Length: 422
Image 1 (spheres, rainbow, N blue to C red):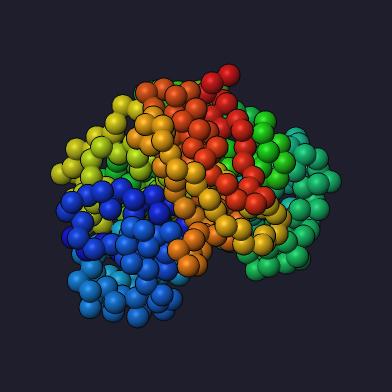
Image 2: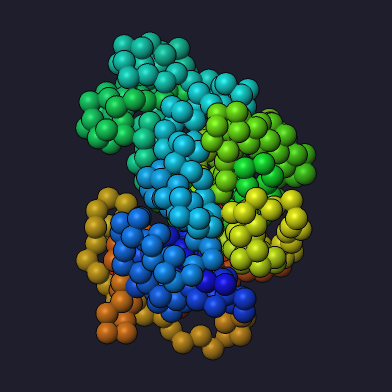
């Protein structure tokens, strides 16, 4: 089977890594990929989606997997399907679940899916009035795509009003913030849950926990994610069943009724409040770094999972996972998340310890290659992943690997998975 992965981050690298290990995968392509994906396959420098679809036709690509949200909301799936190509991901219409937070919140309300009390508006007076009705902290969200940074948790009414003013004026997020969501803050613990969907059927993956804040102890600014672990012991079968019955099934039925059946990854941000799962948001692709820790837990070939989801055959697949845990620690560049950083050479020590060699790996993201050397390009550079029989063992192995990786200005948290280990 020939497979192409659209994207350039650690998420796409980690999917490519498990596919590379599959003897049934003949050729692997990344569009555009990064400086390290050439270790797994061939990078394709084609930005135009029509031309990329033609490349898929010319090279007999059997399956295309879309990683990031940008191409999905731009309609890459529709373009490929118009050529009769098999592609994993939601249509442009279905991708509105992430592309517009207003669409998503109104969808949740319409189909009675539990979510926080909210208002969506472009009117500053209405926004301020609703803010006054809430108790701080208060959540303020930009409507459009903001690379995972369009959510502000305001600690006071005044801070919430400033956030709304800056969004509606276009100062914060440009056009993406010209309509806003304001919602009540839910006090509980947050989960990342992922359902692979084929429009009708779905498979729920083990629940993960992400660490959004830059610094230890969940301090500092929000980021795209500084680490994650799975499965989390904070979820039991009761919560899994509640999420299936109250969130995923009504979402798939609702999207069918909207004329946009959902195919691809439904990423559900869940807040568990007093044992009840409340939907914070939807994304329409794998989380990053959650994808990096879920892929090594997959026992069923990833090729089968993605292909059967893309061809509406999930009901024929029995998916199995390894009875293990995975922890991923993000290494970011010096100025992340505030500014770009000067490229820095990445040096990985030769690994002599069998435990590290056999139970850890690196998923590369913000890297470039020059003269056989890898350079940290800025942003989130890579993820050190450890797998083990327990969360502690997986965590310890991930940090052992972190000690083997060096580049100028490297930044990482030292407490990933602390929620499960305290």
